[in-house]
Length: 402
Ligand SMILES: *Cc1c(COP(=O)(O)O)cnc(C)c1O
Image (cartoon, rainbow, N blue to C red):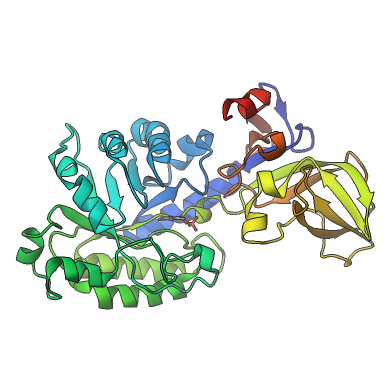
């Protein structure tokens, strides 16, 4: 992997991170952070290609994690070497998790009152020499504009976050004062976390904040509450995102409640910042032409099936828009391992290379070896177009997990 390549010469299947595009996203986020005072973290669940962390560290406040492994990666690759923040949230932590998270995390966010009760004594008695982690609770404001239930944390019956009524039940009152908070189980909680967005603009955030202020404004006003984390799902780096609106809203919230505002986008960091490159292995016919590729929806881009969506492909068009239409499908035994139908100006041939776009986020972190499918190698493309190898995988990686 030492030799350098171009996009056209690397062996497939391969993920290539476009460093120029990644840097552009990161610099937009830095500008928002600088102008608003928000701390912007990268949610590693979307993108954990840590070879890029030294570059991202120049622009971001740190990383957030969905559990111990991601938290440790964020700490080892960005937090510790670059003096950045490491945050973590999970629906539940074990005591073993807590022992490992306390020394490496700046914020630890609990999903339920019971989780806080379980870990509170250990958490509050832990004092690190250099810094003490800050503890927060994830709240469920029961308001989200996400229309796909699988991505909606406020869907009926959701396990994600604490309802306001549960806080009141715990305190035995709906009027919360400084003294009541301090003499309750909540003493030691310094922040509130809300995550209710997915690929959304500023409008939904503004409306969500209105609900958050109505339902949780009294808690945010407590002097004990020092930070407000507005989660991820903000499409901040999209061209049409109202960044000025976001900046003024972050400033207003920070001033009104005397809190540091955190944003933790995943997608916005890595959107449109990479390729998945595949090769046509065969073309078969069954009512239409079907190209079998060495990249798989099921193994390499599972969101294509989960969301579902049809990923953009360089040089390809809608079905039947151009003379040659193909169904593109993976080399697995899953009948539904179909990436989508696309048309082309020219006939596809065995050996042709295909460049799927916007493949940096929610791909590498989700890929798997179902059917023993090879994992795509990972490469970084620098500003000059040169592509440098990061990692390749083989049989041992497949075997090691089983
Ligand atoms: C998924 C998630 C994120 C990141 O979401 P994106 O849509 O990738 O921006 C941030 N925080 C939490 C708690 C999440 O669950």
